[in-house]
Image 1 (spheres, rainbow, N blue to C red):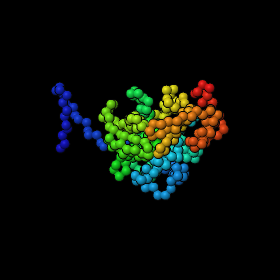
Image 2: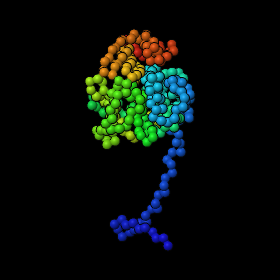
Image 3: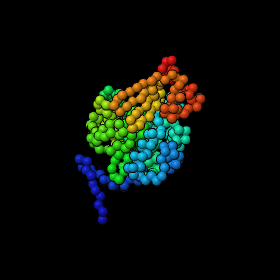
Image 4: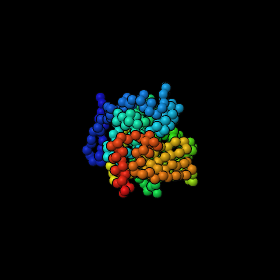
Length: 310
């Protein structure tokens, strides 16, 4: 005969212990977080110039990362034009693949995540605090990146960092330092905020500067939607009061900030050219591969005059 398990509470009374809790069911019935099945993979590969068999290997990851960066620029023109940032896979495909536009970190890395999902990679989405220009002050986590596991080894992937950064996947190893093209990168474990904190730094020719810090807490597209809303709407967001477009290659970064076009080398060298407002649309097309229609060009020019007080 089974007996009850009495529990005393320090008085003469006894209580019966509650039954042991059963193992919980899965929390979420929906597990297709990254929606790779909604991606037009053939069209995406055509956009970035890749073809053939692409198994989930490190060679594939490297090829995808470099090709994506070379083909799809970083830009915030949706925000400049007052349009919503849509983060579902069909919308991202339509904008960055079919219409050959670019995007900022959440758009870029969510599109890339859908590609990795479709190809069978295992990965975790992360968020980071951008530290470029922060001068020692903490910032909120408003950047997206991915940790991709290949044959049991973790790699960082990030095709959406507008301030430079990795050209190809970077080993997730404490103290690892490497050159990608001419650009120096280094990853270190730090403990300014928590024990699970990492810092990615870049070498500018004179010294190491912080790019961003992050933890390995997993994120979902729903989290990115909240972060993106802040970046697209908050008056203190770096994207709501200026135009930005950028591409980066093995030995040169090109950056358009409002009407200033900069060419930056890995050694920190920089040349700048001022672009007349009415020619910015041409620069977006010829330098960054971003084609705008006449109405969009007019809208961009109007916003630029507001930004630059012309």
